[in-house]
Figure 1 (cartoon, helix red, strand yellow):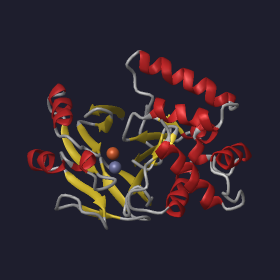
Figure 2 (figure 1 turned 135 degrees about the vertical axis):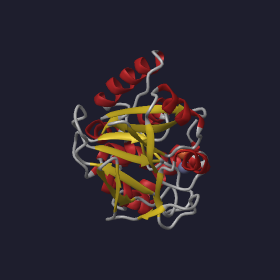
Figure 3 (figure 1 turned 180 degrees about the vertical axis):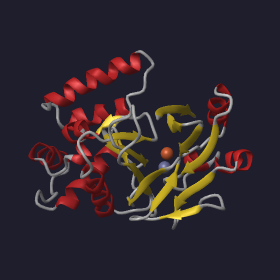
Length: 262
Ligand code: ZN
Ligand code: FE
């Protein structure tokens, strides 16, 4: 099986999985890059479309791709996705490419946002794959458009509980700007300093910083580290009055800090 990010718009990735002449894509906000990828491999058939949430930059190409290819569309049961689609919710799974994608509810960015986990992808891939849309980004997390900080914190906790070697396939290349904020929060985090340098090099060579490795996210992403003393202290210095033992308040203040960060 192969996994590639197809760049779309300014900074989206449409993740494409391929095996035995069949493909699946995640969050095709634009049909164009998917048609181009299919055209590069004559005979390759689009079998499935997995959607994480209803935003247009994740769903804009769904109808056109389905009509052209007959691909089966999977999407969050409680969100407004181009019909018809197979409704997914936490605990259910999408059966595509002969594989089972487990579904996790991850509300916060949107109210019905879901993530897909492929626990044992076929060789030569050897690590679990997470497709998390706009919930977890490398170095950051999605904005809270529809959910509460408590919901987003619980959603990130659920994703952070996946195995260390999970490959995090986020829907946007936001890593460098996220890491600039992360360094403002934890300037003394040596793993973060090294990781930021590594990602700078990747981008300087025009390469994606993704997929991210979950273990590295736990060491560097402030939104997975909001219970660490260093992060709590930084949030308190930025937003005096936040109770250090109120984990939701700390997380909310951290998210607000990022919203205002330039
Ligand atoms: Zn979104
Ligand atoms: Fe998005």
